[in-house]
Image (cartoon, rainbow, N blue to C red; front, side, top):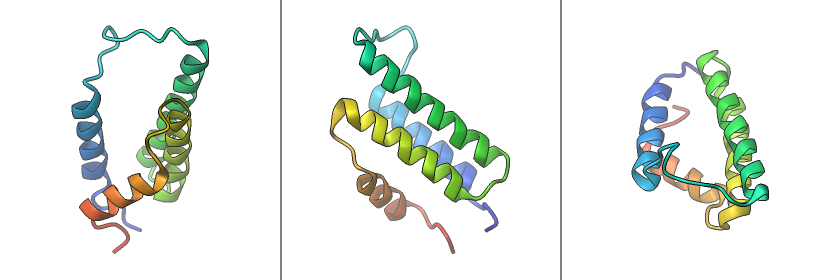
Length: 97
């Protein structure tokens, strides 16, 4: 795999997330210890995915970490499944060609 388009994919995912949550470290408070631990675990998984991609590792390694992050966040929200993410990615990006 050449990794062609991965940088664009990551930027679009980041923009999509920012549009959805308008993240700012000063804008929220996590008052539930369980939620804080889950969010820290999810953040660690996302960071591992970023490192994998920036190290030119196969995209599959990043997908495993992103899947773990999604599962963790789903423990809080119960709203998103991995199938939702796959459907969004594959409907908007040409991957694996």
